[in-house]
Length: 261
Ligand SMILES: O=P(O)(O)OC[C@@H](O)[C@@H](O)c1c[nH]c2ccccc12
Image (cartoon, rainbow, N blue to C red; front, side, top):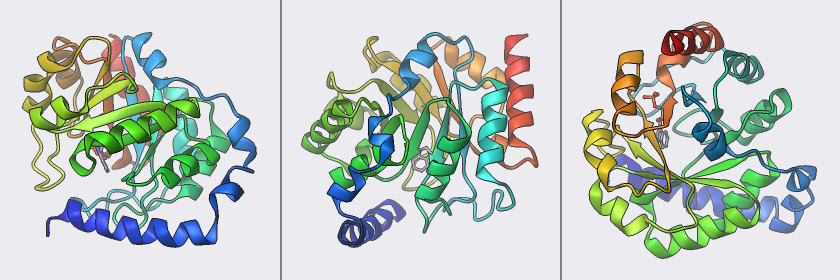
């Protein structure tokens, strides 16, 4: 079994248990259900830099990135750096994140927040909204077209933006539909962990222009972004490059300043 299949199998068990502990109608009681979501797609369209900065403590491909930070400080630092949005990993087992991280980030900042999760069930979308997310990620590698449609339409009904992540042409072709806002190309193959920015470049032409194009993973230089911008990318999801430092907000600020020069 590859790592992605394993993550999904674990996630199904986790969601089934959580649904019995906190029911959908309990989630619906959250005050955050009333909150008007901020649009990441709009922020990216109006930006010349397009940085989406991630909070990630560890990952299956890198066991330790940074365990010693406070998510609220990271969120505040990213907001002050001028990022367009923040991605918060909420998977516990493989990424060391939690829904508490999302709540804490929400309490700290007003920028659009992406719930970074392996979504395989509608329950997780309600959970995202109830914990203050503005955007959900849907991963084409683990969903069929029907699920992508149901999940994205549910997200839209909550006012959430949808970022659909693909890694190859087949995933892209099966996924295109009007209920998506952003199309993300993951430069990291989630099954093998290989990273290549060529993935973003080669798929760019096939992404219809009504979607905001986002390049994800393995981005560590301003030059890489300038190059990807020529392929039409307006969003850049960066995790490790900021999180591996002692002050991710400061790193993001320096990065954005350099991009603006
Ligand atoms: O740390 P990086 O290489 O900058 O990557 C960030 C982000 O793209 C990556 O964490 C990611 C992209 N898609 C995902 C799906 C699930 C978990 C994590 C991810």
